[in-house]
Image 1 (cartoon, helix red, strand yellow):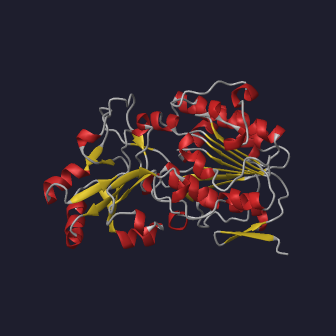
Image 2: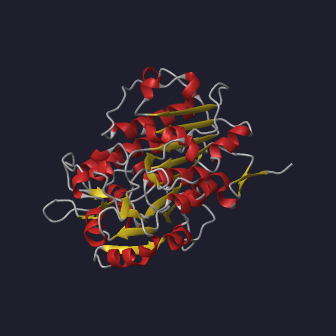
Length: 413
């Protein structure tokens, strides 16, 4: 009998010597952690790193929440698991839909595979939009799986989530979705599950509301990482194997007056190519518009007349703040994207710029602070922190979706 489990063409140890925990700290650009540490706000994390490792990794492209969380929990990028954004477009039907339904998944999660081997699984996410994807393949009537969100913790049931009465159990109310509390709920629940449920594998995924609003070093950002640090030593106790990473970084996208920097690409292409000749899709789109106003650094474009793809690329390339403009085939090859869920063209903006559709389509009235966002290659680099020394050279190519591979296989990887 093999001592390995093959999951999406990668080999994982079948036998787990300790509880495996991966934490996705949403939007955690390296500077957030480093500044908080320099101010003495993360003593537990600092102590853990004396015996661990702090490296940098690449996130999947586009550097958005859904594709990266699913990359982390499948151990592969989007061309394998199929989730290419928070949102996608089907030209044949004209349908624009959220990619939060398990029917869009094309690969099993690591959780599903280990659950089928008899292991106990716990998954907690801040936003409910990820819950059904992360929990796909788990059975909640056997006492070995728990999966719920902070956002809808009061609606959890034994049949749907493997747990009920969460708020009474943890002694916390349902958090406001636009708050640090949503992430703290995840961490607090994770600690409690480690103590009482004793899972073999656990995944904790926070929200990036704080990172969208506040820059590294801001008091509110420092408060967030100080809060996180309170839970770190408990998460890493009892010999648990822990990897902390992020789904994407976060960069300022505002001008000196605090106004959003945005190229409204649909307006531009309508003017240059004719109305409805090209359709701009923003995969950052989700229900949580207060975070970013649906402005990110990545866009994909569907061209009506395929003979005009080259001309459209030329027009977009003339925009100074667009740094990457490539045909579908090149984008899929370079960034490992599923071709049937990406347009004819992919483009990414410069470090301090975002891409919108039409100006009239973006309600930016709810943005109370200067815009901070993500999605492109400038927000691709993320921390990769292990509480144990791993067999990874500092110059080795590393992805955030290697998190479970190293947390499970450890120093022998």
